[in-house]
View 1 (tube, helix red, strand yellow):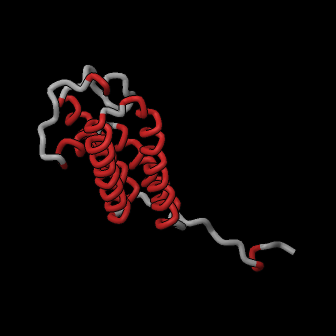
View 2 (cartoon, helix red, strand yellow; view 1 turned 90 degrees about the vertical axis):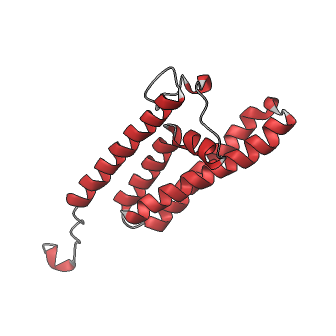
Length: 152
């Protein structure tokens, strides 16, 4: 499970860093708002690429592979990437974040800095509980079928 959490943490930090570098440095500086849709498609390609690579890295433990993918996706969309966006830039989270109000995985609306952090904290606690449960009650491996088990 430590590997899954490490992969999720690295994925979220890298995703947030590319968001800072591309959005803040290029889009905000040059006012390229008309290319917002293209930017966000590339943003998802990076996220899905990280999920696929981690899936391959954690295979054949498919439970961990699926856990990583779902955990990274939900945490990235539940506000964790937004919190990291501001924290990695060493700037405070704005008091109001209206562009996040309609996001289904952010638990509180209207989205304020405090609500965003509370939503992220709830999602993190939920995922910690899931990983503890998976660790305490592991999925048993499938029994292999050998020729001795096949009736003649």
